[in-house]
Length: 105
Image 1 (tube, helix red, strand yellow):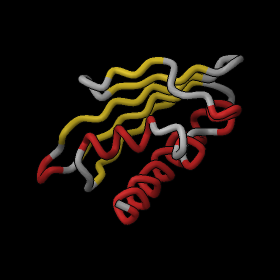
Image 2 (cartoon, rainbow, N blue to C red):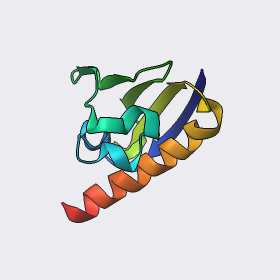
Image 3 (cartoon, rainbow, N blue to C red):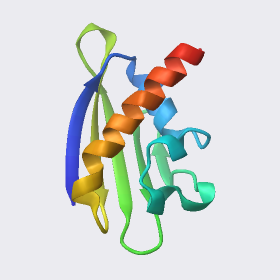
């Protein structure tokens, strides 16, 4: 398993909703987890957590927490093939998707 954390300057709910939006998942989830446009297999909106599972050994778990100044702190746990190489890239891609979401909204 590989893990990464990062802060984002967007409200936690915006970060979480962007992460679980089926139309935005392909912008940040690694390919094995987004294949076929599968939605998250488990979403807990009250806790701002979600989990994705794909065939094989791929899983992703995300948790979004409030941070100072109205921002968010996000943790991604990724398991599968080259997870250690992809976890930081996936969070950077999610940050871009959040920025795009804020600019569009």
